[in-house]
Image (cartoon, rainbow, N blue to C red; front, side, top):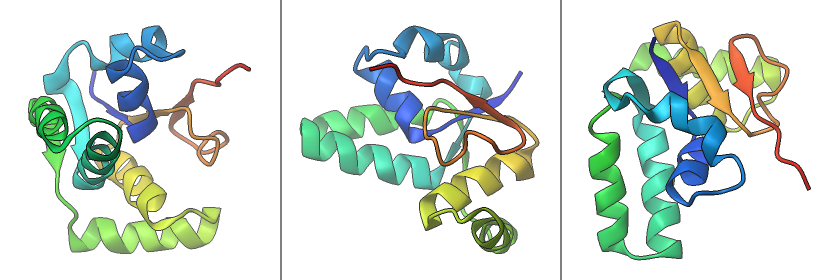
Amino acid sequence: MAVLVDTCGWIEWLTDGQLADSYAPCLAELDEVIVPTSVQFELYKWVSREASEANAMEVIGITEQGQVEPLSTSIALFAADLAMQHQLSFADAIIYATARHRQVSLVTSDNHFEELEGVEYFAKTG
C-alpha cells in the first residue's frame, strides 16, 4: 500500500535514527512511496549541509525509486487551503496536500501533523 513519508522520516531512516525501525517498513518498497518534490528539496538541502552534495545526490537517487509527485497547480491551491485551515508552513502544507491528493497516509514525526486526518505519527522520545 502506498504511503508518503515526510522528510523527517527519510532522515531517521537514512541516518539510522531513533525511529529508523518505525520508518523501515514504510520505506521497504520504495516503488510504493509517494515522494513530493518538496521532500526532495528538503532532503537535498539537509544532506548537502550535513554531509556533502555528492551524498545528497545519492539520496535523491534513492527517492527517484519512489513515485515522485511534482507540485501542480491543483496541489498548490489545495495546500494553500490546508495551510490556512491548519496553520501549516508552505512545505508542510505541500506535503500534506500531496498525501491527501494521492489518498495515502502521511507518515511523520513532525508534530505539526500529529492530529491531522490521514496521518500516521511516530513520536520521538527524550
